[in-house]
Image (cartoon, rainbow, N blue to C red; front, side, top):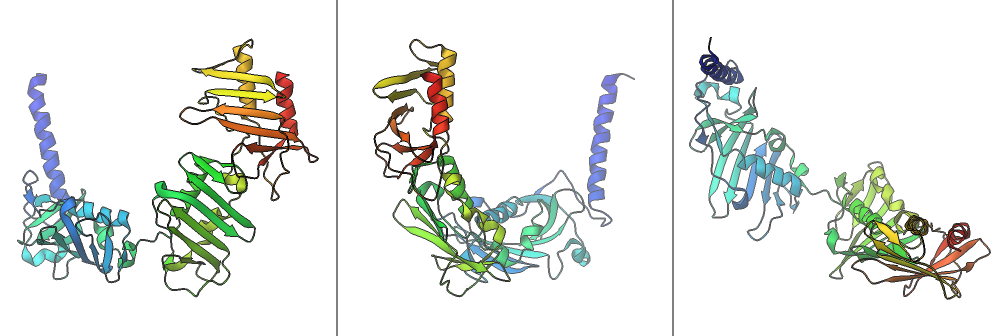
Length: 422
């Protein structure tokens, strides 16, 4: 047979298979349905919805958002900030059900579709113009990503999606469980006080200072801040005042406001946490392990914060002698009278000099023996001073102009670098 003659047969077979699949999807319910004819279920758009009321297996919950806001609040059966992600998921799942495949459902078989006297869920949506629309949501279809629904006109359809998990959730599941609420871009200070001491970082963007030391590692501070945002209440409710908290966490914002939490001892339900915003509850002990961070976790990890791939220029002077005057040219480093390979090695070794953190501050730097100037793109040059060898075989490192007490650099590492250039 000619292939041009078989092609229509293949297409026809595919259509028959699809139709058969749709009928099988209906199971043994034996109802009329045209998969090619969709009907409007209801007319809702994400940005027009101001109120969602759901009555389902988990109870009744009502969410609202004012016309001038995008954030949702729970207003019934309690009043609280809503879990924005869950509320938005609910909204999207409902607005996705705008159209559906019509289903000719006999009235005496409504229970089979979850649309009987007590439907699986009832949803009432209020739009920005005050219009209210109601939708009864029934069972999930046996096949296909669809759910049986009935609108206010009594039309039954198999609408796109499966919102059953959200519609059956208990109201408490829509409560925002974040322990701390803030915009990380607006943070200018973060601190954790404990019996071991206080760890505090101040700054913004890529420039952070570690109080009592020198620079903080900006990426590590970002991780610290985001870790605080990840804290979640396991249970919320009133707790007794914390007279001697184990941890005191504070976050300072750009506008000068300060928020935070006091962390108490472990109870039978978890660890008690009281927020400065008046909310309190318990959290799982594992989630608070990040509060035990120390200077080595968020402080600078190398002496001069040189990035061989982005730093533009590095100069090292000792006793008025220039030991290194290197400039980056693309991916290569150059210095007068020195092989490019050797220049790159000297910069790399200098960039990797480690720092040490101890509870007690380092000795005063005294007269610096090495002065290191680092010039990065889009930033002012930074001058580092490295003092003489101390009795503990370290040298004190200090950033010129910084109020920090300095850091320790192992002398063995410094001597190794000096042997490379002298």
